[in-house]
Length: 376
Ligand code: GLA
Image (tube, rainbow, N blue to C red; front, side, top):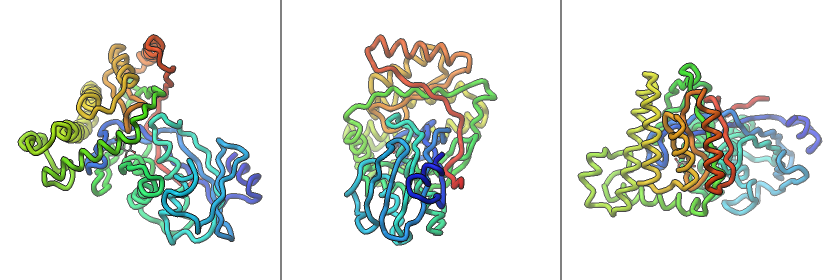
């Protein structure tokens, strides 16, 4: 489909077709920009990109989700934060490749990751382009460097101060595993996540809530963590144990302490979660998810009533544990269930949302899927 749509639109076949997935973060939230450890996995849903080089320096971008529209610019007009709307995620990646891209491009994307659900549709878009251009330009950057390039596109071109987690998992995930990522050096360990053999499934609940705090709130949390690290005399909060943090409490404002406490504890929860997964101890994994949610809600203060209701209703309906995921103030929550308990829980969550007057939530499930790839 993408191949023939591209040909119909641009009058020739694409040179390359790539795909990149969205993600769910199992554990380790708001710790990537503190050089911490995170453990996301790639979901099945992915974004596809078909690309060919042009003989001039023009860039033409189209999306299967917006038939009839073509965005046009030129390589010579790319400069940070200037042009486009959603196209900026693509332009940012082209921009970040710098001198390695020196011809114009025709691009058609087909986005299959739900927008605004906190499942990293933006990283999927960036990484679908990054992995294609990496091959097309023959730069062949290693994946960690490609993740940094895509993050730079989002930070500096689009202007979103995100960490490195979403791009890393979209590029480096493997099917069947969660990705244990050290956000300092981007080293990874694939941690097998076979919920099905244990009779379990992870329910993804898209609350469809978006609270206005989302932009400023993220940057503000990040700033608090950075100022706390500075006052503690360390490079990042990753370099601090909970005992050291408690001992140095006097150096921090109460707010910085609360934020730092979440980060330090959530990094520890990532390590515990890895141990429990290795032992197939899903009861303990569930408890850790729920502890993380409480910390994100009460210490990091980035939950919202819809996310809390999704988690609380899951817990009241036999979930082993659950939590909000991603940046916060809306988006999705995850909850771990025995397979037989999923359908009744979905009904209960939908009913609770209705009773509270919230928009009807959307439900997904996904096995841990593979990372970005060139597919044609
Ligand atoms: C967003 C950012 C990530 C990460 C999460 C919170 O998804 O893009 O870098 O900081 O929030 O863990």
